[in-house]
Image 1 (spheres, rainbow, N blue to C red):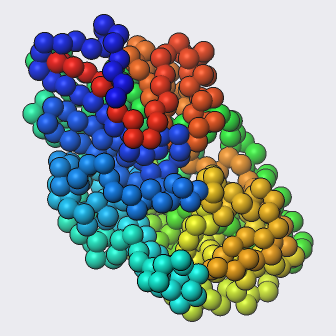
Image 2: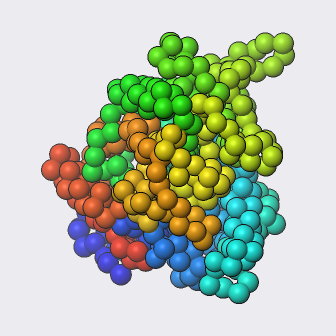
Length: 482
């Protein structure tokens, strides 16, 4: 266990001791879990599933280094599976405390965890039927029943409200942009003689995003954990419309279908926004857009329920809420039959389907049938983690394994930059620069190692802050006797 010995950082002889253990998102971009121990109380910040490389995915099956029954409370920054997907397993293994998040995150989590459980069950069954699992009886990491138990423990709160967790420990959720309900967490620790603040950035959104508001300013931090997904690159948004128009027009001229793997939360809605805008401006032909993701359909409806925390205009018409998502050329595939029918479609069209990194979901069935079609185009519109099928395809492999078979890749493969809901390096530095006084230490998390290293160096050079890139399962003492 590391202990910082900076005199201004640790003070002894008083009351409160605080340490942190990195159970995920340390030199990786998935599996966010940070275990904070404040005296005898144990707080888990985020509870994500590992995705991407096999060595990371296998961690989902490892026993946690803490008994879930010993965790007092879980705080959730936002609903993405790499921040929430382990919750059903945690509850299954004995956790019974509160799960605290924002209202929109609560609604999204219910949808996403049930969907994740269904995928787990379907993939285990599919692996058994196809015989491509090395296990005689493949089992899901968690079930639908496990996911349903999570919702019984959730307690939601609005942004900007101080929430008392324990005596001397409170939090405030600040809008982080990124997706509906996404928050940075400001944790206030009130000791006998001192007050300290720990900031958990969560995933920071883009400045100037067409749908989500800018991330809110946080001006004080004694200890900071910041994401670094795009900490090593710039991801400008000013060319998104041109790049997207070029890909759509190319596919249309080739008389093909455009397939877009997309995260159901945030990315799908951004794509609908841009495609609708380009069609209205006649920059691309008016094509049918098929949203083939039950979760994306449910999530899209939540933009109307939570109209106050995003920019999409929602108007009242015939006693119904109407927005761009109600455009007549947008078709939501609510059934398996409507999804399967897309495999036989030959006219130019656009299919948006989850998951965004091609790790599961209906997108696998579309790629299984369409990767071999020279007229079709596969377009990536977001981050592809190391070890994911999406990264494999982007790196130019000639085949990819789907449902236990190697599928040839003959279609066009394109990538549009700037659509990511993650802040790029410029956005991250802009958000960090609002902190008036340098934190005693800034932990660089939620980024692949190369990205984390680059971002750490950039912070040290541009802001002059002390940075640490923690290792997986590393423990650090933050405060002693505050």
